[in-house]
Image (cartoon, rainbow, N blue to C red; front, side, top):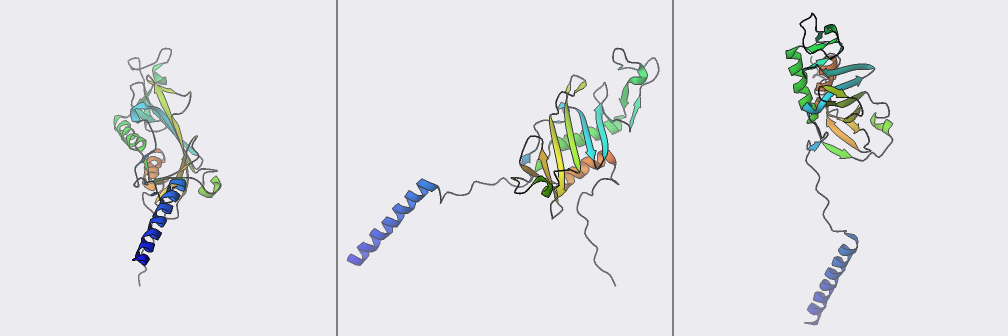
Length: 219
């Protein structure tokens, strides 16, 4: 019986030692749960909160604005200036020709895409292990600036948020991105960035929704 008793005491001593080690260091604590992919909200505002969005992409700039009726248009394209004495919506001191008016179909398209963009979900949030240039964020290829609204006018005091878009990951299915004032990186699906750039600059100038794959060789 003595060898069995010795084994029992040894096992008990090991158990007590493991408990003490866990209490002191947390060595055996489970890893914190990681959020599933595509579940990290990027923004705390929605399309109704926006008064203007500016998109800068490879040296080009596009500005999405609201007309006096709150409808979206892209400044410099897809909008018209009100004309004639009967034009409505002119601000005090402005002539009818100074009033921007949007095309309803284009306005709906912009509003729909901005609603999607403001619900953008990142796959992961990671801490950078290298300098920003390693992720294409020292000189980002795209920048999205989101401005709020004060009544029917954009609020230019401070952007609600700024999103910097760097390089694609090696898989080419997600971009490295960073929000203004946040040191962490967010891995955002490629298609979410591509849709916004296509809206602003056209599909021909925007990246494709999915990476292109070489076609199989044929005889």
